[in-house]
Length: 348
Image (cartoon, rainbow, N blue to C red; front, side):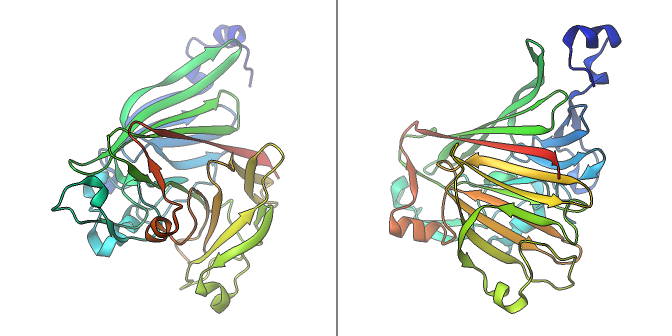
């Protein structure tokens, strides 16, 4: 496909013939009312940004071959979500897509943590559900479209997600997503700000979920693993290979690992899932200083078949442990942190 601006103008009166970004609203079932931005780069890369689901990326494919995981839940409207249902496990009823954001003040498993920093006596503690609230918060869409930068056309979208309560946290996520016309990469730039005036805890994690047909028997994980720091008990019980993946297994219990990765000379971590039979690799890169921890989620269960790549600000012990050992990130008044992540679809 030509990327020449003048030539494209000669060939078509509308850039959408080559690619672009389109705003639509899903209209049926549990997805009814969810706004989505359809990105098409023209190279075969297509993905949907779920505006009302934290601007996470739901379906994602290349040349008609899906790589973003599709679970049985669909992309459920956040109005159906109750954060504390099922002892905090209700997050699993909305768990689907290439990216599900975890945070902004809590990741990993739920529980009660002290709320004394908010200085409101009736609120003695905060109860968190699995992976926090962010993934089920709608965004305020601040802009989207196509922008020419010389001969380069950038497809983009930006929105703001607010997680706030009176006498509690006031956190703001500004998310920008970019892809080049004719390109095969997705760029994600997130800035999380404490918009309040009391120190706020901050934990952040991307649950990046890859599914069939990219994930299939014989597909493999590419990662420069220095050592595995922790693994779930199910690893010893089931002994499923987490580097070269088996096919679906009925009744499989998730296997989870915390791997220490070796940063590249450019300061990036890079992991990928490769399917040689398809000739397809999906790689994820992030800055090691921004996400120093990495988890692998292996879910081979039939009907839920997926592998998760999880860059994280914190180790697997979670919220309460981070407060005890001093590793919790406390954002001061109006303080921000920014995260840069890139997805690339490549030939295997």
